[in-house]
Image (cartoon, rainbow, N blue to C red; front, side, top):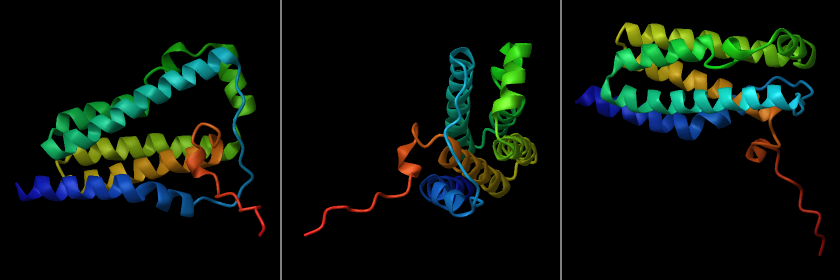
Length: 165
């Protein structure tokens, strides 16, 4: 019982503090929204919806000690839900051409973090699962802050008040 309470406290703390930490660690690189062809954009959005659902399920699985669910979800996240299965050769070429190196680095870290989350769940280590989960969320926030500010405007810096008395 104590372990479940601890795990849920950690998850709630991560969900509220994780994005701020990820933004603070962001390297000083030129960032922008990424423009993709409509069909590739739709695939990416479908992928992001699947990842969001998986990440949300990890929180409740952690609180319940459902290690198998976390292992399975992290494996699906690591392997990509949709992109790897539906990507055509021309779409793969477009991604290679359009995506900045820093985006590719963040994506690689994300998939590695998903693998580490699964390993922690396989070991049935709630503290390590919570830590890896928090790092996974930090990675999401860092990428969204860097490359999807129009979709996630809360990551944009506050606008200076131009109203002068």
